[in-house]
Image 1 (cartoon, one colour):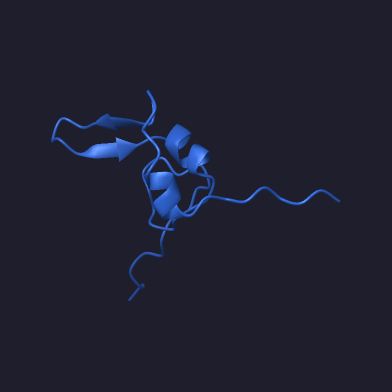
Image 2 (cartoon, one colour; image 1 turned 120 degrees about the vertical axis):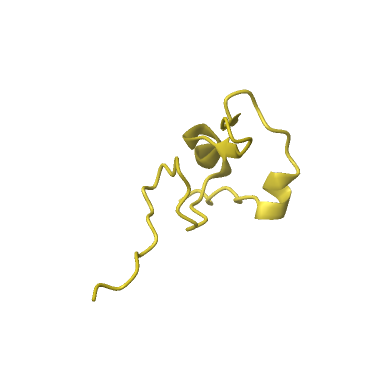
Length: 64
């Protein structure tokens, strides 16, 4: 069985340049990472990103 390729750490990935299509800027000036960026990164950060290709959504407030 071949060994799984080493996944870069977040610090190693952050040192790579952004590619066209990795992000866009909202009218308010926020930088938003696209699904392309997240897929290239290769893992879910579990922060509930707008374009999460893993569809992670943090739990909402408890119901009363």
